[in-house]
Length: 229
Image (cartoon, rainbow, N blue to C red):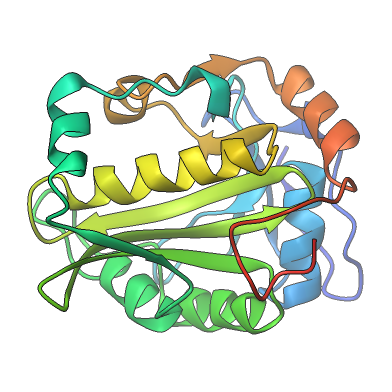
């Protein structure tokens, strides 16, 4: 039975109560307030729903993650990065990145990054929790990604690319920076072949929860100058 959240409570059901079909659906309802979103990520779930649907909260099992030390970069991509044709920045234009991530894709109908979702993550960015990576070419934004940083963990949300390899370069640059800063894990949520090619792999949900407990409240350096370390 699907759990429905009360608006006056930020508590989520235990992750073990997530449905097996569809995999990982944990709860519905609630709102997208900053406090609830923070509670959700700390608990091990995230929102994902289409326009017109109730807010749906997911905790898939297994969970797709990337350990920074296991990053794999192809020879061709590494060669392209050395050419210096792209510039990568952090938090230079979060609104532009999330807007681009929400744009229609040729392979999908609609977007799960609704206006309400954009507004919610923009507020998290103002609070120093959500961050963006921008990839520039000749002064134009050609790729990027955004996600949340909590403790020694980064929760990836979405990426976009307007030219070949732009988002890949942004992603690799981010992972390498997070590795240097001592981040333990990057949450990729669900399996894709694209992420697998970078070394991401699936782990049991229980193991993911263990990483949350261990690293969420740790502090240290970050790639974002505006984020307290």
